[in-house]
Amino acid sequence: MIKPHGSDSLNPLLITDNHQLQALQTEAESLPSLMLNSAAAANAVMLGAGYFNPLTGYMNLADALAVAETLHTSDGLFWPVPVINVVEDTAAIAGASRIALRDPNTEGNPVMAIMNVDAIESVTDQQIETMAEQIFATLDPEHPGVATFTGLGRNLVSGSIQVLSLSYFQADFPDTFRTAVEIRDEIASRGWKKVVAFQTRNPMHRAHEELCRMAMERLDADGVVVHMLLGKLKQGDIPASVRDDCIRKMVELYFPANSVMVTGYGFDMLYAGPREAVLHAVFRQNMGCTHLIVGRDHAGVGDYYGAFDAQTIFADKVPADALEIEIFNADHTAFSKKLGRVVMMNEAEDHTKDDFILLSGTKVRQMLGDGIAPPPEFSRPEVAKILMDYYQLENA
Image (tube, rainbow, N blue to C red; front, side):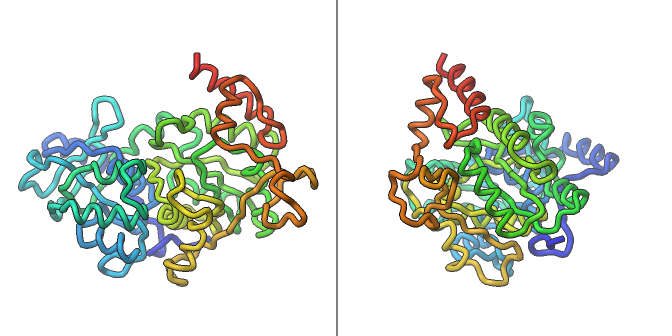
């Protein structure tokens, strides 16, 4: 199986030994505590689940700045996005060397990790803006990632962590949320060697379905891991539970048995386009995938990134030896009226735009909200039904 990034074996930070867990939970009661913001809590989940291997905790300011600028930590580890814990107020933890980190997304705000505090550093507005511009390629406050990142605070708390819980993800998504360790184990138990990862934060329509099929066929892969984001999204995106239902229905009806794993991970979407695509590659390697599908406007939002910037970054900014996972570059996929099937548009000869069934996200949402199913060439009827039911409840 493909090695994890940066180490020979996966080193998840989640404490799984019951005696150690109980001892740490008891210790946490007597420690100064810090309420995490949702972004830092998401980082703790990814660290705990092994997705952010080989990191041992939150980066210090030097590493965060170096990663934003060069995609490497100060000691040379390739990493595409700062993994940080930035807060507004540190009065409650002043002078403490060991602190409890509380979960902002679970009722009662239980302790989700214990941290060894290496440093509490002030971050200037200029440093925050420099990092934001390098991560998101814009400082537009309308960009949801920029708005979140620049509003987190100006105190950076760094150090190693021991993770006690994976927040609400295991309880809310017991059939779908999986750690990198669990996915590696399942890939091994299925006997898969060549494994393709498909990233999604949306329901999967015919174009996505066929893209997974194309990647499997062209790479002669054993299976696809559909890996959906289960954390926080921007206003208007489809909730994770509805996406989960849609994807499972599609896989059940339209893919052969033992060819697709439907799983999810607990992280808040960054909407960082190219940089987030590279992060996706890092943690898909950590979970045991050999290939990642990167398509049009991967992890993008609005018109902030070029359609294929998330593909070209791998050639332009990722050193050849940085990652073992390989990228399956995909063009825009759509149903061809001429050929009667979904194709990559750049491979369809003698076609004009009118020869494809192309619907904008806005148009699809409007149709579903009005109780109108998109054409079956665009969306499987069974998937459309789940989405229509959701939108009609939302609009009721």
